[in-house]
Image (tube, rainbow, N blue to C red; front, top):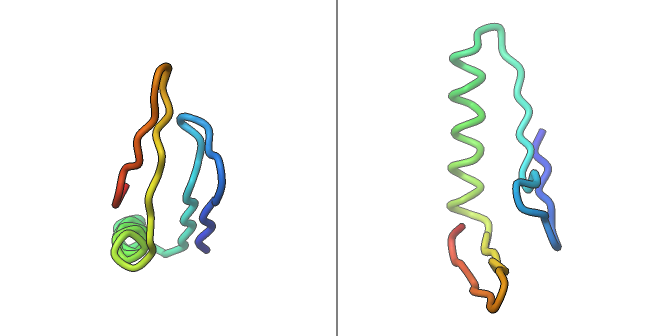
Length: 61
């Protein structure tokens, strides 16, 4: 399962959730890592960081 938030996400908020199931934890970790890596390659992921006095767009976040 993969869920990806859109819109405003609070600092330390969850923006992506990946859930996998496997008989062995190593395979589960490898699968989750693969999914996140592919998501970052394929999806147009960007963010705008806000702080007192300014903001900046960050590509490929």
